[in-house]
Amino acid sequence: ESALYVVATPIGNLGDMVPRAVETLQTVAVIAAEDTRHSSRLLEHFHIRTPLVAYHDHSDGQATQKLIDRLLAGESVALISDAGTPLVSDPGYQLVAAARAAGIRVVPIPGACALIAALSASGLPSDRFSFEGFLPAKHGARATRLESVKQETGTLIFYEAPHRILDCLNHMAEIFGPDRQAVVARELSKTFETFLSGSLAELVERVGADSNQQRGEIVLLVRGAPKQLEQSLSPDAMRIMQLLAAELP
Ligand code: SAM
Image (tube, rainbow, N blue to C red; front, side, top):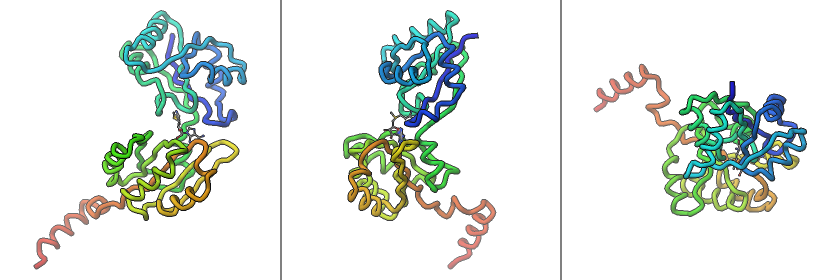
């Protein structure tokens, strides 16, 4: 039976390529990649000789339809992106949605994902989190987005470009308040991997003072807003509070 395999690839350390990803890429008929030149280096390293085609989520849907046709004709296809898990701030959503709609089997091959790697070692609460992807580059649009997540109580996770990190930390300090805790996770799985933790004000200082912290690939994590009383109390405790409050003069 043919299938669309959604295959995660490393986020910087080739040692993170899982054996099942290599096997899958070797056995499918074609590999759909975000950037064929970039991916050909990965494939060479693992002696994978499967043909590559370029794939992006274009609005006209032509690239998607071509791959769906091949899948319906019985060929298996693997989808990869430049790094990490496809569809996570990367192309692939249209293809996966179209494949599912056409009744094609879709199989994930799990592996590296920068946001999960960052969260798992950040020391911030991991029971609830929301992935916010890349913030808008323009100040006004970014302010609107930050305001909209200001009251979130779960950990907030962002991808950020290195040349914008300082500006972004400043903007967050302004909107979330300078005392909100955050973590800058940089160059995960690579030689210069670093985690900087502190308040937003402290991070502005430390990242501002060290231009090395404004290079490479970055995941920015921000602790959620403190829980409101109603959210942290059990329903019973909340009822008692309400009854007591009603009796207060
Ligand atoms: N699909 C990828 C994933 O699963 O994480 C993300 C692709 S997105 C286009 C690229 C962004 O992910 C970078 O700008 C950075 O924010 C983050 N990223 C990717 N690799 C990283 C790494 N090794 N260390 C820190 N952040 C990384």
